[in-house]
Length: 137
Image 1 (cartoon, rainbow, N blue to C red):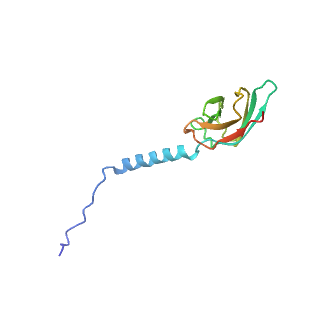
Image 2 (cartoon, one colour):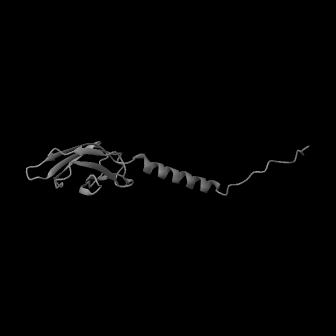
Image 3 (cartoon, rainbow, N blue to C red):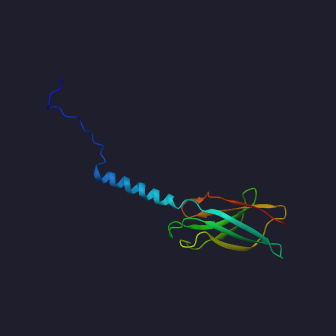
């Protein structure tokens, strides 16, 4: 029979209150960075110009949070993954979602009849939804 003086053994994790707060802050930072997610292309259109180049209008959706995390570009890709054009987005669009931007003068080789448009954000890079466009030549 156990004595009344015996008490359960408490094990310390070594973290203390400071370690617990640091862990919680790290979790919040990681969670906040992931909240905006990846930049998605939600619509894209390609129109042939008289000079043989193409004009792309692309609509991007992303939970821009400011200069530290925003959709910063979209690209036009050949079927083999070659980047044919890049439209740099120079600032966050926190209060304008989704947003559409265009890029003209894009040269597409004559043997390519389909391209994919993808967006990029400043934290995750590429990886969101893409749109594939058939080019009417």
